[in-house]
Length: 203
Length: 295
Image (cartoon, rainbow over all chains, first blue to last red; front, side, top):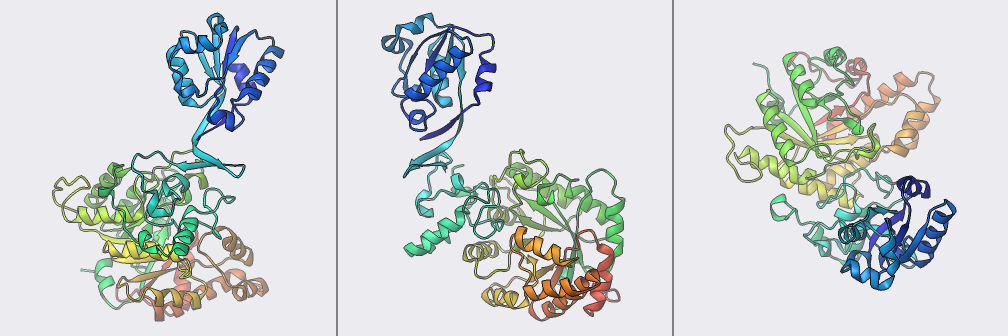
């Protein structure tokens, strides 16, 4: 899941300062699950923009903003998009990019895109994967040090953790503490002893 | 000709290194003065590399200045601010400028420093950088291209001293495998713990130079315990610092006692005086270390 968060409404208003006849595109994938681009949020956005004096020509929520095939496929869902002079996309950067590529009017984002993460047991977990294109997560017990460690260290911890908490964010467990404990439990510390040289990594 | 740090590392001497922080600015007067306080008392000066991620003058420039003033230096090099091109490039530059000793570390994260929004690099980690230095010394860069007149560095790495931190100990072993010449450690206050650490790495044949930081107050000890990773000042030392009327003197005395104990356990001590280089001669005298005559 792509983790994105809503920009402050003031920033959205500033972006749309001289714009009108706005069509809002949500996203029923990650953004909806994170409550920053699903139907309730799209309706709320339309209302707040109208309260600010904007004319909202319509809205649509494609199953995934990043996978919209063509402008026509949006028209099929809501013909009002033909009247739009501005489009606001409530999705991640991929969604904004795809929509920007298929329409002729200016497209603005309402979200900030942060990382590739997930959601489990009601909790949003950011930075689970660094999208490095060279997956080695198995060697680290399913906890990717490139995603979870701010220094992306593959050969062991940095020595900056205090009482098991990350040097960068004391609220967060040190990724290497988690990795080591998990591998110790599994009896697979041998996997961590491997020296990762630059030559064997594709990055 | 006087002995180099490399020669001394091969001897049985108890070695003394200290730390010099580059200036926040372009005036090198203080650096030269700090180094002058300890001339001939220390075997080499570590020149820090944007320590604690605070932007300061390049360690390469400061190292060269100290070399010109007749000091031996260990240039520190972190993985935080340079990618693999810049690291290799600075290594070649350092050697050409006369720097013969380097000490490699990951580096504190940029969020801890005075430019917290800096994009941290960490293109390589310390183990990878150490492996690359080994390759460069053999005459090849990371990409396998030949290097003319390859540098012959003496290479150091750093370590915390808590043997119970198994993941860190595992990483230290990886560093040792790259063929490092010395290890400098975080500050030691608990000699018992340090002894356990030394026993746990008795199979690693790399000289260990144990860090010390003279305490200035009980407050400083508590602050470091809370905030500096790998530092653990035991309660009895904090009590001693609390109950003395002269905390600075007591801090130096505690430091000297630690050094006296370290002499029995490892190959040297790395003194991190935090701006008080003028106290080092006294601490070394209290620890009964005389280096001047033989240097």
